[in-house]
Image (cartoon, rainbow, N blue to C red; front, side):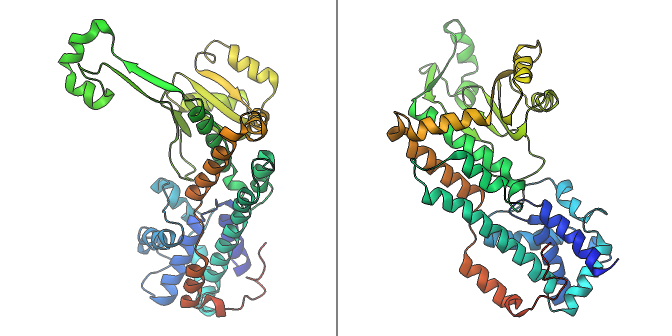
Length: 356
């Protein structure tokens, strides 16, 4: 294998990575350890497979404030034969040592570039108010940018969450949980369970709380399941894809809920009708919401007759959730990191100066 072929393998991992670039950072830290400490054998995966996750996490916590939440199996995919196995790492390592960390610099330059692209999306939120914000323009900032396209599902989820949560809060929806009057003796028998699990007691056999929708978590794991859930019994699955019966079946079979709302990019009318009327489907799928519905509802929320009440809340939630999901790297700290490692003095040669 040539160095150009090894670089192609690395570029493939970078292009497939979501904005956080956990796997490329892991590769960079393996190469850094090999170059500086020389206490690992790049041909022997056992000398760095697990340790390299800790090295990666130190960097990720410093610049991202988080670490990968993917399964161990998914994280180890980086060493598969069709990714960056030890044989490729050996070639990258030799090149990296020969040129004082050029491969490490290349990876961290791509990391910096990716977050610069993300900043343009955040700037859209800052520079647009409820009169000028267009949700489809915002989504397309990520969809049309190759470096961010892998994260568009997460952006779409945040777009949905910002709208749904704001509307439910502004509507002041309440959820009441109560035990049947004829079941008071059972409530007393299991009073500790009722109090600790349901929040009910003999004195308070009814509880009323604010309705909420919740994101399952801020994670970019490719193997995650549920996207959002509501405390009034609804699961929400969000896919920036065209809905097909096959995709709907995958969603329904992977979520244990009696009521599922599917939010998708688009779908043919006949597919929607089929899914909502077929026996076996209609009992599980409460509704199907498309991007056109979101555009209409965002327009109403931001510029409709209740815009003063809802609009700013939608946009502030959107911005806060994006910052939580994709924390901005501190530029001064990152520049200091590059100086400390000497990356700022490395000149990229014709191989590593090519970003394609």
